[in-house]
Length: 277
Image 1 (cartoon, helix red, strand yellow):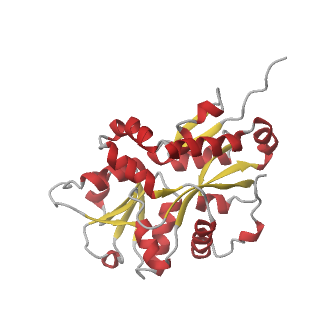
Image 2 (cartoon, rainbow, N blue to C red):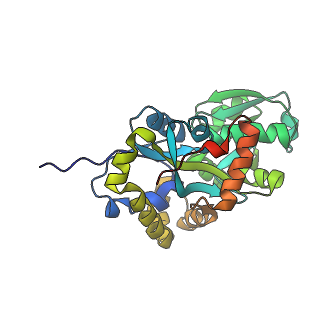
Image 3 (cartoon, rainbow, N blue to C red):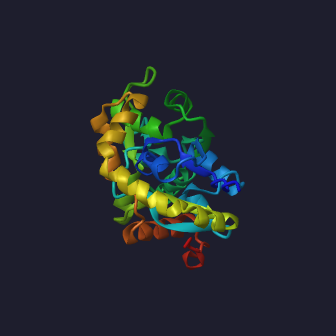
């Protein structure tokens, strides 16, 4: 009798998923993974190419009728996140009113967070243009550029001059959200396709994710040291970055998420969210 294959798991190909992913093979040997940027993993989950994955919190809400929320797993921050950054030639984001802002093509939640901040925190209406994520080309054509993930983390640490215009200003959207609401911000949650729930349950994938996260958070320095050469950053920078993130979707993270969705998707009803169990 052949052992049934494990469902495929999606994961975001950034440093911030390492506390869950680093030790996963120890608990789920042989599981197939699809690694990519957030927008691609969103599509893979919604199209059924993966059965479980971290998904942008905004996209989870938009598709919550077909997805189950995994309790206690997230990628969140209270204050500065260090990898969702707005680079701009203007010292005050309010000066971006009516100007072009280039948006990363790798993001859904962060793009909509910026839209919320512009409307409710800065009270401005920029022009938006989605572009491939490259700070030089984005700031060559726009007054500001939204970067996420590893590239944002690296650019935020290095803080290099861009072209002939010099050093852009930098605003951390996690910090800007905290100024607006006083709450954490949840960038991603883990979700299961409803039609894959039985297979996920039988394979024991969610308990394995919890166990892998617990071990990963006990060994943050090691996984940061292993990942740092990929970014060309000191391992201490990567360690601090991971220690500043939140991975448990606690009540504060959930409240921040609910407030964000009230702004971004006013018709969304949190009471209708179904949980994986």
